[in-house]
Structure formats: structure tokens, C-alpha cells
Length: 281
Image (cartoon, rainbow, N blue to C red):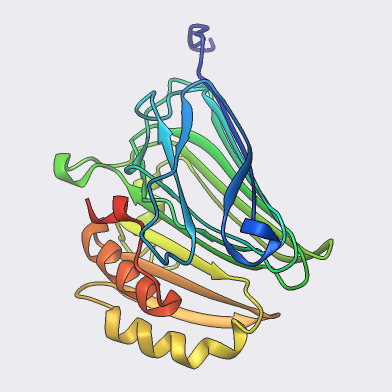
């Protein structure tokens, strides 16, 4: 006999849509053209320091996390020359589910010469969480996009083991309408056992990916490797590769603390800019 069905619940539906432009039409920190918010998602814009190279947009989830069946969408559109750093107030928590799958959809569109650094803080996957997340980008020929995402597998402070769950993370990037990057990670079932396999996670408790699709990023591979080696940290495995015009980095670590430190050092050195202030709190 099939088991009992999960009870129907009213779930959170959050939407954020932001369009920004460069000041006076010249490349520089973004100014808001249009902003729409719905449900528990909000965007906040800390005051820029004098001479700041970019505007910061900070995502706030007033629900405190993502529960079973929640549906959240973030849409960012950068007009020509606009410069924006997108981040989040804190780590995002993906709570356990008794069946329904949560959906997180992120979409960005960058016009000519626009620059976006997508650098949210880490995502924490609870035992029995069920989540499908996507990231889609449409870039003009000379747009600059840097994406960083980190995932923590379980609450280490509680000794949590991921005995079951679903985590799917799909990235698709198009430049001038042509698909230039596609990557999907899908883990389902006994996640802790899967992550223990040498070919998957090697027992890692956290992982991260950085993708730089800026013009010239591929040519910076050796510089990236030098910075990565200097920033690696104890117990952190990391590597960089480049192809098809972009640069990709991967991190694996036993816990989020050393990975976060390594990634923060790399991001600051690679970009030549400080991380958003919420990263330092």
C-alpha cells in the first residue's frame, strides 16, 4: 500500500524583479529603473561608499528559509554599462520536506558592457530537503558575468547526516543567443552516501562553483590558479580550468568555514574589489 500523502499546505511564493541602468548612460554603479517585490523576498541597497565601483543589491528572505513546496524567483536585468553586485543577507536554509519539491529560479540578462557579480552567501541543505534550483543568463557579446554559489550539506554543528533528499542545480548561460555553458548537478536519495563516494564528493561537507564569463576570463587561467593556490586553506581542495572563453573554479571542503575563507580571498583578489559588507558580518 502506498504511504500517506503529504498534507496540502499554503506555500510561500516569492518574486523579485529588478532592472537597473548606468548613471547618465555611462558605465558605472547601477541606478534602479524598476523594482517589483512579492511574497517574502525583498531587495535592499546599502549606501555606496564614495567612489564605489558598483551598486550592491542584497536579497532578504523574510520567511527565514525555503520550506517544502516554496517557489522563489529572482529576475535581474542590467542595461548597457550598469555595474551591480548581487548578494544575500545570510546563508539560505533549505528545510526538510515530506514530499513537495521547492523551486528556486534565478534569471539574469545583461546588455552591452554590463557587469554583474552574483555572489550570494552559502546555501545550507537540511536532511530530507527537496529542491530544484536553476540559474539562467542571457549575455550581450561584451557583458561581464561572475557567478559564485556555495552549498553546505547538512548542519555540521548538529552532526547532521543527509540520509535522504533531492538537490538539483542547473546552470544555463547564453551569449548573443548562443548556449555557451550548461551544467547540471543532481543528487537524489541517500545524499550522505553519495557525497562520500570519491568520484562525487569524497566525503566533503561543502562545495562551491565560480564561473567567470567576462571577456578575457579564459586568458586569466594561470593568474587564477596562482590566486587559488595562495588562498586554498587547510583541508580545501580546489582547481581552476578554462575553455570556450570562460573560467571555472570548483571547491570541496570538509566544512563551510575553510571553503568560505578560501573563496572570499579568491574573490577579492580576482575582482580587485572588496566583498559586499554582509559577507563580513
